[in-house]
Image 1 (cartoon, one colour):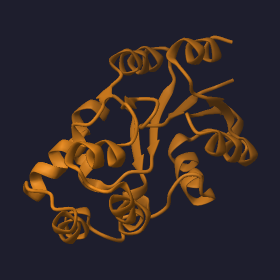
Image 2 (cartoon, helix red, strand yellow):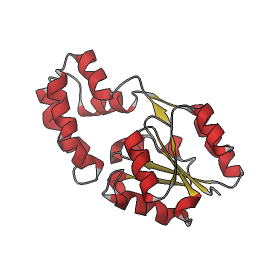
Image 3 (cartoon, helix red, strand yellow):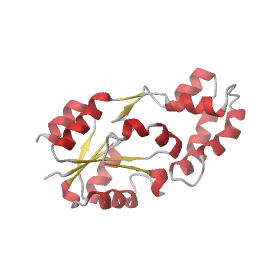
Length: 190
Protein backbone atom coordinates (compact mmCIF):
# COMPACT_ATOMS: atom_id res chain seq x y z
CA UNK A 1 0.00 0.00 0.00
CA UNK A 2 1.38 3.40 -0.99
CA UNK A 3 1.80 5.86 1.89
CA UNK A 4 4.25 8.38 0.40
CA UNK A 5 4.53 9.80 -3.10
CA UNK A 6 7.80 11.31 -4.30
CA UNK A 7 7.41 13.91 -7.03
CA UNK A 8 9.92 15.40 -9.46
CA UNK A 9 10.00 19.15 -10.13
CA UNK A 10 11.05 19.73 -13.75
CA UNK A 11 8.87 17.79 -16.15
CA UNK A 12 6.23 16.95 -13.57
CA UNK A 13 5.41 19.96 -11.38
CA UNK A 14 7.11 22.61 -13.53
CA UNK A 15 6.90 22.53 -17.32
CA UNK A 16 8.81 24.42 -19.99
CA UNK A 17 9.07 24.34 -23.73
CA UNK A 18 12.55 22.84 -24.07
CA UNK A 19 15.68 23.59 -22.08
CA UNK A 20 16.31 27.04 -20.65
CA UNK A 21 19.90 27.02 -21.94
CA UNK A 22 18.84 26.46 -25.55
CA UNK A 23 15.99 28.96 -25.27
CA UNK A 24 18.18 31.72 -23.84
CA UNK A 25 20.94 30.97 -26.35
CA UNK A 26 18.49 31.39 -29.24
CA UNK A 27 16.77 34.43 -27.75
CA UNK A 28 19.98 36.34 -26.98
CA UNK A 29 22.21 35.13 -29.79
CA UNK A 30 24.51 33.10 -27.56
CA UNK A 31 26.20 30.06 -29.06
CA UNK A 32 24.66 26.85 -27.70
CA UNK A 33 28.16 25.39 -27.50
CA UNK A 34 29.41 28.26 -25.36
CA UNK A 35 26.38 28.26 -23.04
CA UNK A 36 26.53 24.49 -22.62
CA UNK A 37 30.04 24.79 -21.11
CA UNK A 38 28.52 26.33 -17.99
CA UNK A 39 25.74 23.77 -17.68
CA UNK A 40 28.12 20.82 -18.20
CA UNK A 41 30.70 22.08 -15.71
CA UNK A 42 30.16 24.74 -13.04
CA UNK A 43 26.39 24.32 -12.88
CA UNK A 44 26.77 20.69 -11.78
CA UNK A 45 28.64 21.91 -8.70
CA UNK A 46 25.84 24.42 -7.99
CA UNK A 47 23.34 21.56 -8.11
CA UNK A 48 25.03 19.83 -5.16
CA UNK A 49 25.70 22.99 -3.17
CA UNK A 50 29.47 22.99 -3.76
CA UNK A 51 29.42 26.22 -5.79
CA UNK A 52 27.32 29.38 -5.76
CA UNK A 53 25.30 30.05 -8.91
CA UNK A 54 25.74 33.82 -8.76
CA UNK A 55 29.53 33.56 -8.45
CA UNK A 56 29.79 30.97 -11.20
CA UNK A 57 27.52 32.87 -13.60
CA UNK A 58 29.31 36.24 -13.41
CA UNK A 59 32.24 35.40 -15.73
CA UNK A 60 29.96 33.55 -18.14
CA UNK A 61 27.58 36.49 -18.61
CA UNK A 62 30.53 38.52 -19.90
CA UNK A 63 31.63 35.65 -22.13
CA UNK A 64 28.08 35.29 -23.47
CA UNK A 65 27.90 39.07 -24.01
CA UNK A 66 24.65 39.21 -22.07
CA UNK A 67 23.79 42.92 -21.89
CA UNK A 68 21.70 42.74 -18.70
CA UNK A 69 22.62 42.25 -15.07
CA UNK A 70 23.14 38.99 -13.20
CA UNK A 71 19.80 39.55 -11.45
CA UNK A 72 18.05 40.06 -14.80
CA UNK A 73 19.53 36.85 -16.19
CA UNK A 74 18.46 34.86 -13.15
CA UNK A 75 14.95 36.37 -13.32
CA UNK A 76 14.66 35.33 -16.98
CA UNK A 77 15.86 31.86 -16.02
CA UNK A 78 13.56 31.36 -13.06
CA UNK A 79 10.53 32.68 -14.94
CA UNK A 80 11.14 30.27 -17.83
CA UNK A 81 8.33 27.72 -17.85
CA UNK A 82 5.36 27.45 -15.54
CA UNK A 83 3.95 25.47 -12.67
CA UNK A 84 1.27 22.89 -13.40
CA UNK A 85 -1.57 24.18 -11.21
CA UNK A 86 -3.62 21.03 -11.75
CA UNK A 87 -1.00 18.72 -10.29
CA UNK A 88 -0.30 21.11 -7.40
CA UNK A 89 -4.02 20.98 -6.55
CA UNK A 90 -3.90 17.19 -6.85
CA UNK A 91 -1.03 17.12 -4.33
CA UNK A 92 -3.34 18.84 -1.82
CA UNK A 93 -6.08 16.33 -2.59
CA UNK A 94 -3.68 13.42 -2.08
CA UNK A 95 -2.65 14.84 1.28
CA UNK A 96 -6.29 14.95 2.42
CA UNK A 97 -6.44 11.25 1.52
CA UNK A 98 -3.52 10.57 3.89
CA UNK A 99 -0.61 10.46 1.45
CA UNK A 100 2.65 12.14 2.39
CA UNK A 101 3.90 14.13 -0.62
CA UNK A 102 7.62 14.83 -1.02
CA UNK A 103 9.38 16.76 -3.76
CA UNK A 104 12.79 15.35 -4.74
CA UNK A 105 14.69 17.50 -7.21
CA UNK A 106 18.09 18.21 -8.72
CA UNK A 107 18.23 21.97 -8.33
CA UNK A 108 20.35 24.82 -7.04
CA UNK A 109 19.53 27.09 -4.10
CA UNK A 110 18.51 30.32 -5.84
CA UNK A 111 15.96 28.61 -8.05
CA UNK A 112 14.62 26.68 -5.08
CA UNK A 113 14.27 29.93 -3.14
CA UNK A 114 12.46 31.56 -6.09
CA UNK A 115 9.97 28.68 -6.13
CA UNK A 116 9.39 28.49 -2.36
CA UNK A 117 5.78 29.67 -2.39
CA UNK A 118 4.65 27.29 -5.13
CA UNK A 119 6.43 24.35 -3.51
CA UNK A 120 5.11 25.00 0.00
CA UNK A 121 2.27 22.56 -0.77
CA UNK A 122 4.66 19.62 -0.27
CA UNK A 123 5.18 17.98 3.11
CA UNK A 124 8.92 18.07 2.46
CA UNK A 125 11.15 19.45 -0.28
CA UNK A 126 14.48 17.71 -0.78
CA UNK A 127 16.81 19.51 -3.19
CA UNK A 128 20.19 18.26 -4.34
CA UNK A 129 21.77 21.61 -3.39
CA UNK A 130 20.81 21.03 0.25
CA UNK A 131 21.89 17.41 0.58
CA UNK A 132 25.01 17.32 -1.61
CA UNK A 133 23.80 14.51 -3.89
CA UNK A 134 21.83 14.32 -7.14
CA UNK A 135 19.22 11.90 -8.33
CA UNK A 136 19.51 9.06 -9.06
CA UNK A 137 22.20 8.48 -6.43
CA UNK A 138 21.57 5.99 -3.66
CA UNK A 139 22.41 8.73 -1.14
CA UNK A 140 19.60 10.90 -2.51
CA UNK A 141 17.15 8.00 -2.32
CA UNK A 142 18.35 7.19 1.21
CA UNK A 143 17.67 10.79 2.23
CA UNK A 144 14.14 10.65 0.78
CA UNK A 145 13.47 7.29 2.44
CA UNK A 146 14.60 8.67 5.78
CA UNK A 147 12.10 11.52 5.51
CA UNK A 148 9.13 9.25 4.86
CA UNK A 149 8.95 6.97 7.87
CA UNK A 150 7.88 4.27 5.41
CA UNK A 151 9.24 1.07 4.01
CA UNK A 152 10.59 1.28 0.45
CA UNK A 153 7.65 -0.65 -0.99
CA UNK A 154 5.22 1.89 0.55
CA UNK A 155 6.72 4.70 -1.54
CA UNK A 156 5.75 5.65 -5.08
CA UNK A 157 8.61 7.41 -6.88
CA UNK A 158 7.50 9.48 -9.88
CA UNK A 159 9.77 11.11 -12.45
CA UNK A 160 9.71 11.93 -16.15
CA UNK A 161 13.18 10.44 -16.73
CA UNK A 162 13.25 6.71 -17.43
CA UNK A 163 16.79 6.33 -16.04
CA UNK A 164 15.73 7.77 -12.66
CA UNK A 165 12.63 5.58 -12.55
CA UNK A 166 14.66 2.47 -13.37
CA UNK A 167 17.20 3.12 -10.62
CA UNK A 168 14.46 3.97 -8.10
CA UNK A 169 12.78 0.69 -8.99
CA UNK A 170 16.05 -1.19 -8.40
CA UNK A 171 16.34 0.64 -5.07
CA UNK A 172 13.01 -0.87 -4.03
CA UNK A 173 10.51 1.95 -4.53
CA UNK A 174 7.32 1.47 -6.49
CA UNK A 175 7.70 3.68 -9.56
CA UNK A 176 5.81 5.62 -12.19
CA UNK A 177 7.27 7.19 -15.33
CA UNK A 178 5.43 10.51 -15.44
CA UNK A 179 3.91 11.46 -18.76
CA UNK A 180 0.73 13.32 -17.85
CA UNK A 181 -1.60 13.86 -14.92
CA UNK A 182 -4.30 11.53 -16.24
CA UNK A 183 -1.97 8.50 -16.30
CA UNK A 184 -0.58 9.55 -12.92
CA UNK A 185 -4.08 9.61 -11.40
CA UNK A 186 -4.75 6.17 -12.90
CA UNK A 187 -1.60 4.85 -11.21
CA UNK A 188 -2.64 6.30 -7.84
CA UNK A 189 -6.15 4.86 -8.08
CA UNK A 190 -5.05 1.31 -8.97
